[in-house]
Image 1 (tube, rainbow, N blue to C red):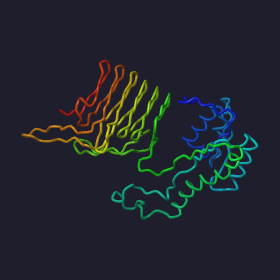
Image 2: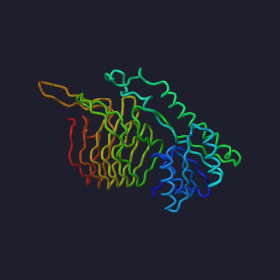
Image 3: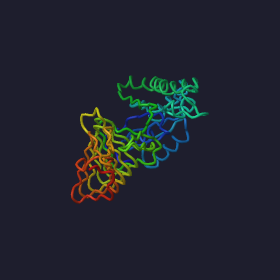
Length: 336
């Protein structure tokens, strides 16, 4: 069972989801089923959607799994007819199928980092790139043509196109205002860029499990998250949760700094305060001094919270508010 942040009743609605054999759309299928919908889970991986359907039906929900090639109009029409027979006419369509292809992916994001013998931009296979475009565009167009006919006839309006983007640092983005209750986001292989720190050291790119972009708000309640990347102007509140690592970032053009509140009952293994207004070591009379950077994030660690390691990364003590009753294990890189 998923702890859903919203309680919306979809009882009687038929929801068709392509790409349901994957992690994200599989979770969407489960969420719709738990909300009362009759779910048609479609994927090229028939074994995955059949297993998902069996699992949901064993829990008392309504779900059927279908093998579907989103680039084959005839196969999609066959699935369309099967869904009509088994569940009824489509009310909501989620176009989630898509992805990349090794033939259309370089071994390094930047040409100057390309290694001899590796695949660079100049080695990309045009057929691989063509496949990716077809999968992500026609793979949305063709299912819509197959299932939206019923929606027009029934005056149903509900088509969700899941964004498919080949981003240098792909991870789960929590956009707008998000509330996560009882979620677990760990073990991601996605990456977000770590910036050069206050003394010029470039940290290796590390995996992040989710990111909160500019001007977005996220609340975590009773969650377990491996690594969180907080962009400038984001606002994050964490309560009663276990977090491995948080990097709070802001930059020179930001009008406001990122704001992070670590609430009571939360344990964070490490917080790194970050900004591109980099702090630097300066040498005066032979003594090295750490100079604080501007545009620092605002962080509040509430009573009852624990942070095992707090890395100021060249910021001053005033950039982090630590309430009485908060437990801080280790403080490093605090500017004078």
